[in-house]
Image (cartoon, rainbow, N blue to C red; front, side, top):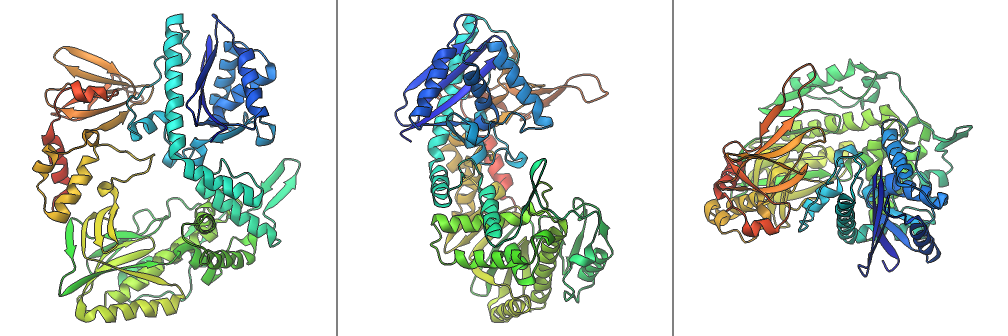
Length: 614
């Protein structure tokens, strides 16, 4: 941290700016290249100073964007803003083709780069998050969007606004860096231990790379080397007969499960996507839905309790997908059966380390990251037959367990999801149900972990809350301790809903007296092709694309204005909260001076969440 500098750049046709903030002391420096001054020499000299002192440069998407532009400047020695802007546009244009075309590899960088965007895996579409969204998640006092359209030619006055915006982004990145220090230290420890650079690896990539290291140590070739360099060894499958993926000893008594099993045995696929479209089975009134990621199903809009007569039990398979491969000798064909031996060794190794140790974390990542990558066409682990063996048998074996449990008197399945299930059973038959689970363990050679819930509130399979002696488990709409890439809008709703469900609290009293006003905030975003407006009798006001706000009494409507659909005419207008007004709050000071919070909106949202569960 003593030698870490957080930085960010901005590129326009006639101005380039760079701002840096020392991670430890907060000292700030900034320079520009524009018609009014050219600080190229100062920038290059400072980068050379950082290199000479063994410093690191911390950024957000800096490996993919900021540093290649800065590297070009340093190699040129002096440049104008247009040259650096052209480089920026070339990087952006390459994202739809070869997104690695402009990457500067670590061995060529002048100063070591740490990219928070990559470490947090925000380069994955499912987790994609901008620095502005992070500003909202971190509850920064001010959230600022880019004040000018990309490609604009800026005036001197506008250049000063841009420089302030650049410095604001650097400060936001520094705050996020401070929240990422544990992740950075973990990567430092791994890099030192294995003499390999893990610094910009996301968690999943760390796990995969560690697994590859173990395979190569065992003599398993993972890559081919040729004129185009290193390419991963793989087993592509033009077609897959699903019968070849199924364990031959899986059988059912229930006609619905047999229908699904027969259908699967008859399928030959050319790609894994779309295999499970509308595939489900309803047994004893409970619907099991099959999907590539795993099976799921649940009762809906129910509160379920353990009492003197009944108990709720939960069973999860220990490291389900890894152990399916280990126990059944499933492996990507090109990696040979040694894959299973190494998988088993990693699983046993993890047991030897404390759960919070870096060794345990690394091994957990190695165990869990492999299955998903077996369906990744760019991965060493790619073999879609292996993917199908894991996901198909994983789902069918849980159905085998559920079918047997449904034969236990009074037992009712409540939920099934990927690697386990929950049920409620009369205490007189609890041992019987546990014996069924033990028999399943012997048959599959897998291990089940048991837990009990005192109460469950189930909206659906993705949204529920469960109470046990270990605390509260929250999923979906009930979550409020969320990750940075997730939407943290109106956290007051799940927090109050929890108190209503747990303690019978009154939502109206809690909402109107809630101590933290930040929990009422929402966020929204529109693409560059659209506008975000507020509208009232006085007219319309445009706002930045990424904005935060709260529902306010007497406030204007919040409107998204979208371009016409293809082949259609006329802009599209969407009222975000019909019947309610808002107070824009990109500066938190507006909460103190703005319109009063409309508590009725939030009370209604709580009531919708807990409907049928109280």
